[in-house]
Image (cartoon, rainbow over all chains, first blue to last red; front, side, top):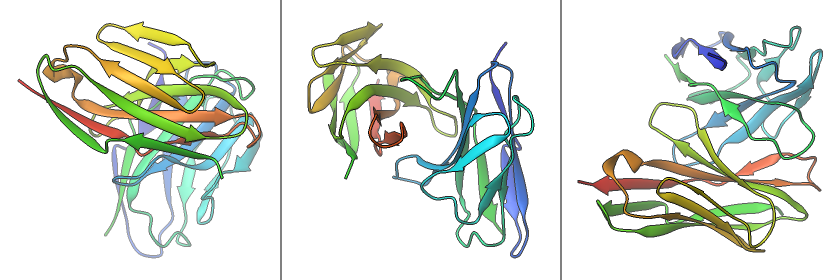
Length: 114
Length: 111
């Protein structure tokens, strides 16, 4: 079955530590996204990639980094510079960036601070 | 500033009791309005895309409508399995094609 796989489901970060969230898709989609979801808040865009080897900052990119070396993969690193990282992180993809394309979401990673 | 506001924040209904969820938006150049369903601890699942005022789409007990200022998600004779958070999102052409999400409506259907 085609879809988006996020791992791990749960992740704990120690102070000063960088952690990486994995996102893999087998939908052959060009565009990929990372969103952050806090309780009672709308989804906020962290980074997006329109095509392989290219990515752009979203609305809340500070303290995060990404790479897009392969079409299928878009990992997100939460760095120690992100002072409030506890949240539910969602990876998504769409067929392309242009046009009004629906988003396909992974099942999410819950990140907590120890 | 582009905004998407959903109301109510939470809604409790008896099984079979029909109602509507609201999504009002203020954006320049609407390109598409999306509805998603999200179950606890999971990613959102796509329901509908609406592109222009007057458009309607249906899926089982759900019907989405769109005007120039808002969208409604009508739920007819809901069942407990319809309990979820419903998210509205808007894509505005002026703002770099980014999608703006509302905070969602938590719907709980009592058996």
